[in-house]
Amino acid sequence: MRWPIACPLLDPGILLAMRAVASGGTAHLLFYLFSAAPPKPPSYLSLLPHRALGRRLSPTRIRSSGMATFSALLDKHAAGHWYSVPDLSLCDHRFTVPLDYSDSAGATITVFAREVVAAGKEEQQLSYLLYLQGGPGFESPRPTEASGWLKRACEEYRVILLDQRGTGLSTPLVGSSLSQFKDAAKMAEYLQHFRADNIVKDAEFIRTCLVPDSGTWTVLGQSYGGFCAVTYLSFAPEGLKSVLLTGGIPPIAKGCTADAVYRASFKQVANQNEKYYKRFPQDIKIVCDLVNYLAKAEGGGVPTPSGGILTPKGLQIVGLSGLGSSGGFERLHYMFERVWDPELVPGAGKQISHYFLEAFESSIKFDTNPLFAILHESIYCQGAPSKWSAHKIRGEYDSIFDPIKAAKEGRLVYFTGEMIFPWMFDEIHALRHLKEAAHLLAEKEDWPPLYDISRLNKNKVPVAAAVYYEDMYVNFKLAVETASQIAGIRLWVTNEYMHSGLRDNGSHVFDQLMGMLQGKKPLF
Image (tube, rainbow, N blue to C red):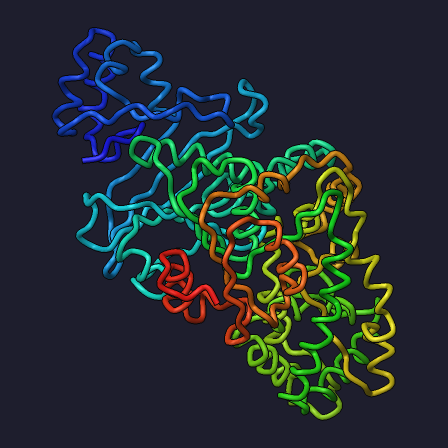
């Protein structure tokens, strides 16, 4: 039976007994009741000030540390009992980590990770795989059954589903919790600690707690999770056995690469719009009529159920979820086919349906995941500000992305993609109280580095990446440019899938990448 820092399966009475006897030198006897052999203490973790806390407990350490230190160790990692969903066993882990790793005596946060194995493999010795979710600002998947890539991975791995800090159960930063900040500067100062650099430090802390002997693990990074994995390769490659990237190779140049990202993105988004309207030409008039209706409405838009306002330019952001993933075109079309209420009373006039307004707000998810909006441009920043890059670059494409002009002329109204604009913090109710902090972050110049190009050039960790040729979110050209800087990386370039390939056919994508790492796929 494995013994993590806070024993997951101990009865509280036994735990109290261990605390009581720890200072008396007999705790090691209880330890042996639950472990056939004591684990070897791992090497220290260079990234963390709390180095001694990220270690498994040997009988000698328990006996010699005393009650105070032992209790402190237990307080850093709490694990629950195993429970199940169909064909999977799961165990919840909560870790107490620094908000700011440079301030060991400062504030702490909780980071949550869910351990997942195939049913019946709870105590088997398995390699570890850490999954890093896309985002920023989105929690890890909640398994309901063994399916997709997770089912395949659990055939040979102990999978760790990490809620990146600020998401899910990891000190979640949502509208209600962020409302505790009454000062925008303090909110911005707090939020600056929720980027990939600290996500990687959290992962390293967790690795030393969970992986026997502080061994290495494989990382699977989807989308923004892949960005985090490249940060991992830059600053803590000693913790990595191998890396799998799916639609997640970031631009790594110094400064802020957001301008280059959005300049390329607007071109790809325009192409996706063309394809959408070819699929659903009947929506051309529907969208034009809707934009004209919104433009003529009092205040330039109509109220949304949450208390925001839907304007012509606000309507365009449905492309964020609708244009770049499998099934997105269909979801958009089915939204628009129910945009208008029926006229039940003659002369009542045209009215946007509540169904459509609810569907619009559900598609953007800023009420539950506001970090995506407030931190999105910062993921491209190293020592330089973003200065609302998407808004600036959109001005270069205003001739085709101006919705009111397009609707008046009866041509295609283009939706936008993975872009955040400053006016969204006025129009979207869930973002309004974040507006001032968002402006401060957009002007922040001293963002710490996220990548080390010289180290990536010398990379020794095996890396395999799925690069989607028609990816709307991670530009193909920019991804290939970065790949050329990562020594030893192998690319699988495909147009079979969009950005959501891991979700759409996860077992195939996982097998393809694993085959490349294991030499089962040819080099050329």
